[in-house]
Image: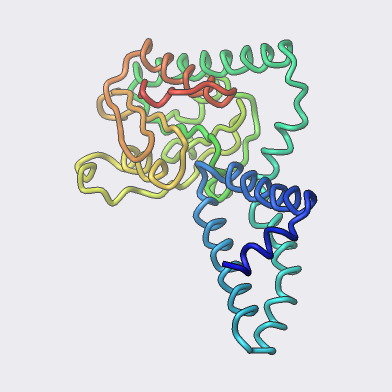
Amino acid sequence: MSDVVWVLSHIQWYDVVDILLVAVVFYLLFSLAQGTAAVQLLRGMVLVVLAAFLASQLLPFKGFSWLIQNSLPALLIAIPVIFQPELRRALERLGRTGSLLLRRQEEEAEERTVSELVRAVHRLAGQRHGALIALERETGLQEFVETGVRIDAEVKAELLRTIFHPNTALHDKAVIVRDGRILSAGCMLPTTQNAQYSSLGTRHRAAVGLTEESDALVIVVSEETGIISVAYNGRMVRRLDMTRLQSVLLAFFQHRLGGRGWAERV
């Protein structure tokens, strides 16, 4: 008890500020990774670093202590590489002016994207042309983008209809959309192993599979029936009409701009 009192009596105001700054850094790191596949990796790294540091301080192993002390700088260099997608999004947010005009422009762009998606899905469903459209949110889908053919074009109904036309080479797999642009077509997605969806076709199982590994929203049009479905968070809602599909997509994009509670509409 006397040791604790001695430590507290020697704490200066700048020591408190120092502790708060370290806490803020860890809080920001976890906030950036929240809701992404990186959060488990970040937690694991923090636990490993803390355990190794405590072990090097408490145990009388000089070689191990030297290894830990010299490994920390390399770890600090590796963090930006490991968490590059999350850091990039954070810097993009900081770079925005936050003005009402800019926000309105973003909302108008999202509304145009939703309009094009709904128009494309409506025609694809009417013609019974199968489709699989993945909308990226916070979790990066770059590994799946790289399995397809690079498009990098603005979302347009005519382009989506062309891609998913049965006579094209890319119609069987997925299109991935990020920030209102079609990044890639013909992308391979992981299929779910959930027995609940074993009776569904490959497109539907791939849609659920991607949402089990990420926070993406996936639109599916059945080639056999023309039924429109939406997958999110490892589950699927089927038989959506155009009104409900538009409502779900608008809520999805509004959430990206700071809205809340959109997932309840799925």
